[in-house]
Length: 166
Image (cartoon, rainbow, N blue to C red; front, side, top):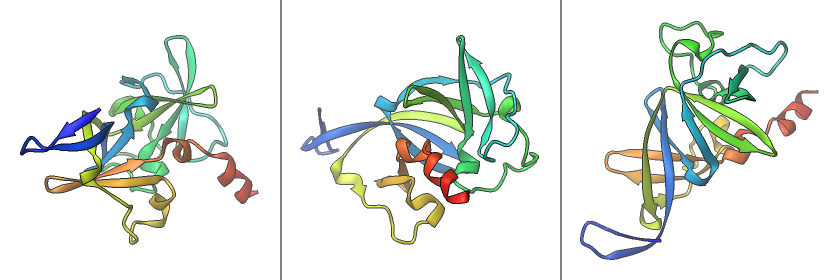
C-alpha cells in the first residue's frame, strides 16, 4: 500500500498502527497484532505475578492475562489512583496474542488507526529511557508530537526478565 503526502506525491509503502495513550504519551501498536479493543472488567488478581500483570479476565470465554502498559513502562500510577488498583474503574484494553496466549494491554485510552510512511519514521532516540528502549521499535514524527511504536513481542516477553531475577 502506498501513501501520498499533502502535495499528492507518493511517499512509498505505509504501515498501519493503532494508537493508544498513557499519561499523555502517544504509543503505536502494529495493527496486525491487535485483535480486540474493549473495556476491561472482572479482573481477578494473580498472587506473586510480576507487578505489571494486574490479573486475569474473561474475554468471550477465554482466560486473558491483563497487563498494565503504564506499569510495564515504569510510569507513575495515574493521579488519584492507588498504585495497586486494577483497571476495573477506568481505561481501555487492547487484545493481543503471542505464543497462543491472549493478553489484554491496559491503557488510558485508545485513539485512531494511523497509516504512516517511511518519511515520518526515525530510530528511537538515544536518550530514550532505558526501560522503554528495549520495548520500542522506532518513533514517527507527527504534527507537534512523537508516536512511539512499541515492539509487541518484547512487551509481552516476561521469560527473559523473569530468569534474570532468579
